[in-house]
Length: 286
Image (tube, rainbow, N blue to C red):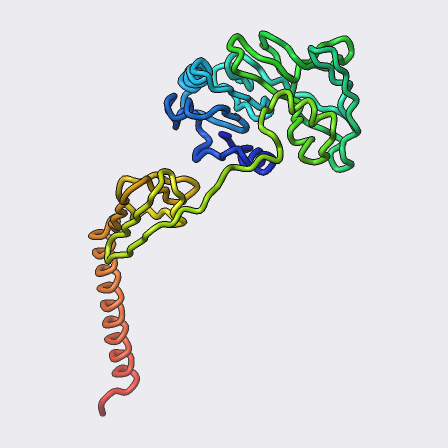
């Protein structure tokens, strides 16, 4: 899950992992293609065309991409919330959703919003190639779910995931189950791996019998070496991993400390001389 909403997605679906950056183009196609599914919610990018090309390539490689339309950033060129040709149009529902319809002929009557969320600010989406879910409002069809020309890329609007997190409504859960293939109660498979860790004067040596092991050692900016990090934790591969501790800007830090000490000493000397002069002036020799 990539974006500011990734944390909440991982809270709802424990088997989903939160990305280390909210920017799509901080990753390579090879990195993203290693995942079965990518969720984009509140994401950003350094360059829109690069990010769009990256997501298309990843989808063509077989990875499923689900874009939460409420989290699409503003496109600088169009000044709209637009990504991959799909625009998120703002809308506010009063008290509750209209009847939600899906392409397989189902109709969903959703309970009213919680009292503190009576004015539900969200969006609907335009630009879909295949609309799979919508609502009819005043003769207008407002899509909330569908795909574009690449079937592995799905867009979802109406802030349905947030509504579900608040209410756990069965009907919304049924809609989301058709869109989000992650079972809500599935958790990642974990196993305990014994590690040997030796702490040296300026290094840490970790020996692991497995790959991709969370060492429980917290990442620091003084660490150097060949190792992976995730969520500020150091991950080790099979074999021996050596973390060298190198203090950045050490010479500059020492210089600044010496300069600060010199200024302090100089100030103390000047203050002492000033006090002696004042005492001399207050007690002149007769």
